[in-house]
Image 1 (cartoon, one colour):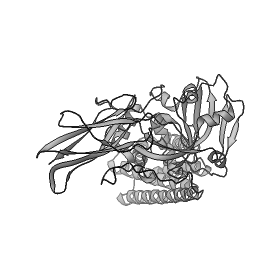
Image 2 (tube, rainbow, N blue to C red):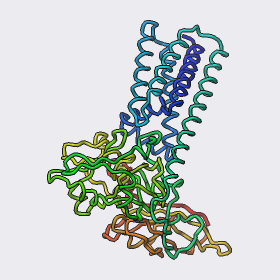
Image 3 (cartoon, rainbow, N blue to C red):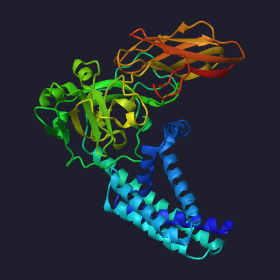
Image 4 (tube, helix red, strand yellow):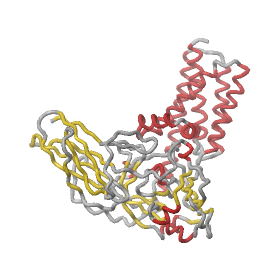
Length: 477
């Protein structure tokens, strides 16, 4: 088989995917996102870790691009099959894509039809003769155009949903956070991370669209009084608290951490109403798509795990990408372990439950955030050669930060000025000025928590127990 035929088959695959995605997008579904979620669910941990490390905050875009690339490559591969095998193979792909569209939180008949339509277009295109360069270009151009149109439709639907969420009104008191005494230092992270700058990490390519009028939180399982609560019910019991949330993939110096003012109901208050049975040992937090994370009930009850059902962030309802209408958050635990977003149910269960991440090889023990510091600023002062401002943020939730030190070129550690603490679970800003001679220098920072734990300087990857190491910057004077 010549290369021209393979290229045309690949172009046919792009056109078929575009047609299916556009049909699915007309009703809010997505063939690409369904395939992407399956990849996230079954990919080996090293593959997932490599994707996170390389793609960073663009991991979702990278996942979609990988899906498109694999569909295109797979279409070329189908052209290599004998004719008698090609039709069953395409039919199986269409059925699989349709099942994936029905599997996710945004499940819809349109998404399933999109998968079937893509398979039909693909089979029709592969039946035609090889054709010339113009035929392949036509298929590829049409596919790209339809994919762009589908993306536009999905983004518009997401924007409308976000606007409806914001129309719910304030979630919290809107009381500004008190100043920490460090003022405004260019480049230094603010006390509160804006929603648009707050990191997003989950296994879904896009957040599900949930109607707040229909949504209810179900509290089920081993309880004396099962409950169904609306957002209004929860808001009546909610309190505000400041806390840093940290992704388990936040290696030193990265920005997969953010500090926010949250609005949520203490889980212990919900337990007071539901009255868990004595043999309820796990709290299973379940998302609308079936994703689960569980927490130790004994630690939740004693307050060792200070958990909340969060419904607001920085004075507003939770944005869809951060879990609207509700998520579970336990300050001091890595985001991957703290609880699910887009909560539909809190189930009181026993130890037989197996979490999503446990199946993927992560530990089933509580994974606490380790003390970590980040250098945001390292810049010589204007008109003062050698006088260098070094500033950043540090966290050690839930007990809080007691000290931050820096060292230059591997010399002794020197204490820095700490900003006032807003809450033990929140991050704390710090700053100092050092006098550096001309040349190239390395600067490191470390934090000590109130518990006495000192930041670990040994570089370790995120998997399987969280990252460690000092953030190091290089500066030339």
